[in-house]
Length: 545
Image (cartoon, rainbow, N blue to C red; front, side, top):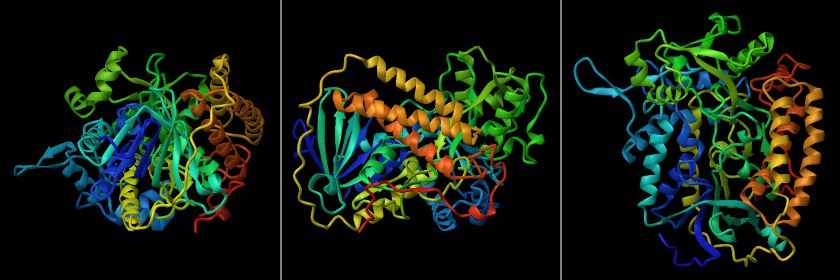
């Protein structure tokens, strides 16, 4: 679609959605019958975290399961930090969301019924007391993203802009010094190299998480915390950034980079073993390999450090080969590329940064502290995940809050647009960089000290070291940013250094061990911190009117 009000460097929509994963595209599709929608994607539509999600989407779909059980499991996994009202709201809409995806053409895996016909095949993952994860083999994210993208591309009211990265949000407070309304964003067109103005009556952040802050991550390179950083600079509160989830099982291979081995393998009977074949998870939790992710990741980290080993092993080879290849074709084929036949051999695995449980604070309608700015999906802090996200609740959150935000936003569409002139991006005082090596060096330094000092196991001294380094690094990056033309790498580095600072600051505040935040100086949970989130307030904070 070509927007009739678009020029080469200035674009205008009713709603601008920054991010093109499950959250962003599902919201675009819900709004498109009523408004002109712009969707920005940093890369191609197949390079976000949704595309790589293997496990599935959790929902109460079996007669032996219940909403109460799903709520209870989520609350337990979240370690007394979930907002029970939000958990109930999210879980209650699970069945409806799965049906909506099926209507859009998502083909979930089915199993035959004894008397003919078929029903959804449900798997079980860590933290769940029932089988309640609907999936499309072991490539659920790909199936969902493909269907959403196909529907969005064909809709006349949705304008998808691939290879566009947002630099900063535009607010009336910044532009004219009054009110607190989001009116658009400055955006770098990666194909032309030009910074363009995207103006909108409403802006939605759907940019995903910040796991690229760590050296090893299961997610693609696009997960650099852009939405969290932009919202903070604009004046939004963030919360619970200390709770960075490490997925316990990523393929350990020098050429594998970011391949996640789905938790569903453990749901179907895979065992975690040491190099000598010994199973070890029962020593850490009575739920064994199906304990929540924080417990499994910490157990693996402990065993690797205790024994001085590079990895542990995930073993499903005791299952029939045809079962493995039919249920896990993606894992099977990917491992085979690296010479590992999972029907006969164990899979070497390590924990890797996977999911950002904190983010931009929102209400049940996904509204942030800034008027006309919404945040949905991993970029947001809704209160659903608490101190540890339960497996397969992430896609559910994306789709439920895209629905909630859409319903609220549609009720605001009849309001008059905020009249304001947005100046073009000013490059009059910057030049092209002749020292790109500075960006590359800072990238490496940031990710290494975050992994070493703010990883699965922390100490006060490690956090203090990380804080000193991130302060120095942010000063260097800001100086560089103010003197040279922006590039994709520089924008991401600027954002990720800020988000890393927020992670460190939250971790220093929480003087207890809870969920994904484990600190040796305070190894026990502090009951006085039950239901207490870690909230950071920016200097320019102004509550939504």
